[in-house]
Length: 266
Image (cartoon, rainbow, N blue to C red; front, top):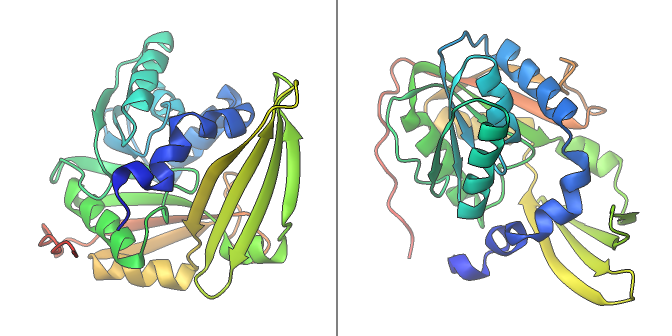
């Protein structure tokens, strides 16, 4: 496994992530997505929710505004600070913790865990992704539910465009290249950034495993969770080949209990 300092999900999320995608993260979008999450999970005020890979806290804040007890977890301590600032600005309170999503530092605590915007599949292997699900299972109360918001692999293949670009608010040009490896089901997206003066640099971008519904269902079953619903988007669309998102809801089986931690490799 790559050292933490060289992992793309450490380097890319230092600054490039918000620069590249920040224009998409409107408050209206976060409110709509959070409303769907609360309804799909049937969360009542006072329920405890973990926003796993919370980033700058856009969903954490909106969920807290709905009366939920929210904890935001992220690997990047700068994002945890941004999440607390967002909560203060939104006049709500959230708890935050800096931690690896493979090592969630809670047990039997949450009624629900949400993992938004394709934050599952970051890691170097399926075994490491399985550790995330094991950790989530341990952090859930019995009967608690996990929501995974993922890019639909079938849609990504059917709508594959290798090269794209957009211009940021400050005039920076973001040239995007996507490389999809069908053998490994990994999508590597990297960027070339060109500023208004013609300065150019490359960004490491992101490299994500795109799981099928069948694969994800099997992984969840291995950690004592059962898929109860699948949606194709935040309007509650029926999941299918033509839906951009694959939003999976899984429940922790009553007999699962605390799962034994898996030994680390290497």
